[in-house]
Length: 122
Image (tube, rainbow, N blue to C red):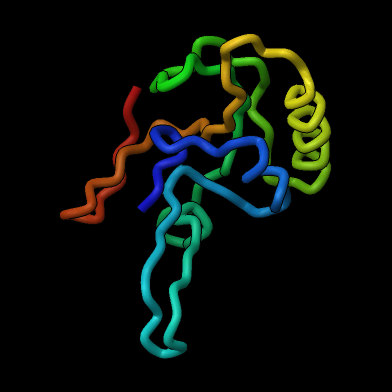
């Protein structure tokens, strides 16, 4: 399971597939029926629907919290993701000194893996 609050997207990862409907939790597992690994974002399931808002921030190397949030939340629509991709590509070309550009999901829900319960915090 990948948490897009803890395990951030790099600009390159985002730009490879900017139109993917992402949410905070990426689930990866082995599908025995087709014999290969599959993955999906939990927020795309009916039970755990999530708006999939992504934000861009600057992080200090190895930092776990954004040093500076530099964008508003971008939604899942094609227009929003196109705008975000343009912004990320532009920001990636700038001299950020020792800061790192990263993308995270703007969702403060916790997933309890033992119970399958999602709870909102904050």
